[in-house]
Image (cartoon, one colour):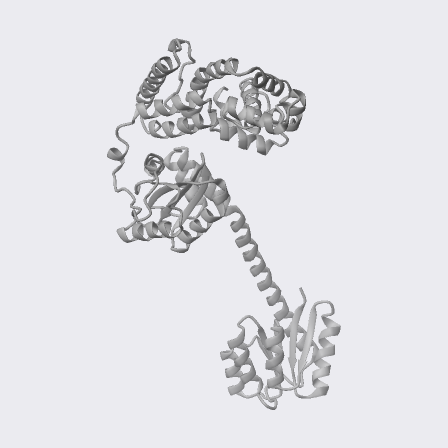
Amino acid sequence: MLCKVLIAEDEEIEREFLKNLLKEHFQNIVEVYTAKNGREALDIYEQVLPHLVLMDINMPMMNGLEAIEHMKQFHQQSKYIILTSYDYFDYAKEAIRLGVEDYVLKPSNPNMIIESVSHTISDIKMQQNKEASASALVQKYAQVQPILEQECLNAILMRNTELEIQMHLKQMNYIAKSAVCFMIEAPMETKDQMQTLKEDLCDMGYRCLYQYVKKMHVFYILHNQVFSDQDMIVIQNTIELSNLKKYAIGLGSIQNEIKNFSDSYVLAMRNARLYEEKEELVFPINDHLTSLAGLDIAYYSNQLLKCFQLGNEEKMSLIIHEFCQEVAMNHVGHTKQMVQELLKNLVNKLSQQLKLDIDISTLPQFHIKEEDTYQNIEISLHYVLHALFHPLKEDRFQQTNTLAKQAMTYIRKNYRKPITLNDLAKHLQVTPFYVSKLIKSSFQKNFTDVVAEIRIEEAKRMLKEHHLVKEIAFDVGFQSQSYFAKMFKKIVGVTPKEYQEFFH
């Protein structure tokens, strides 16, 4: 970038001399402007904001020192060199007060002017480099910040250790003394509205983490102080004013210890419900122990029963996620006991409702160790329940009509290809509309979901056999690895890598 230099000199010969001297010596470095008096210098200054001003003192309409004082009020970044024939102490003293870079007496040697200008331009370039570096650092942080926030939120939701969460907070350059979670069950299409809500909360001085998790918009509000009653009133009012009460909202309790931050998420899931239009949103005030007491096994087994009856594996993964969030805070022995109780309760319900004879001892064992992470608990339970779910899905398949079976057979034979609803309709010799309705009525899913589930089922098998994740995506028919990972987590509840690591 060229260095803009303004020369203010009332003597035309001197003005032209200085202009030519700078252009000749600093060619391709400077862009020179000239003014014949202080008033003109000030007008040009406001238009171009020069980096450097060479200023004579004694000029008509406004002297140089007055012009500099006005310029400094308009813009603080410029530098000034005074060129004058007046060697008065008062002038020099005023120049120092104004922060002038140099004070050169006329008639001056051209080399002295060049040396003074050269030194000042070097200072300007150094300052520009510092500002550019600072700007680049701010820009880079702005790009990295959302990633750091996502990683921190994931660490909380995945029940990482207190030390790991502290590390993520440190990377964010934030000290959190208190946290509270709330969630809103709304379509993905409302994400812009959710982002606005997040920004509103940040504008109030809080740090707000946001992510779309398991069909819920999850917000974690962090504060560098313990939340006061006034803080909670402000947060509650902000959520109310966002016009989101038409959706189910879950409010967690305030947690003042990092190791318990994830408990607020569990409580928010448990409390999710629709609010009446005039009903106030009030965050519960519970301590850690009482708020998480009394895990409702019957509730979870009933929810899973509905998933089994509808053949909805995606919904099953949501229930598993919520259940595992609650049990993960217990020691290993208690967690195993609750899982066994859940399985026993679910098998009894399946036997009664679907008239099935299920031997619970034939199911894979639920394995966890003391050092296992939250992800391992969720993967292990999903693995056990899938062994129970898959045969029932096959049994439902046998009961579907012939054309629906043919549709499923075609999909299973061709899922590795980029098949479409039109391809399937052509194979069955029916219209795309008819086959779409047939799949929906037979399997309670649309065509795309059925294809994705079959592909994910094969991917799970390959992951257990330790194939490379990037190869599996294309082997099972996905056109991109990122879409494969997104669909895998949506259906299974964990990433392909986490699922594979569990079976190592």
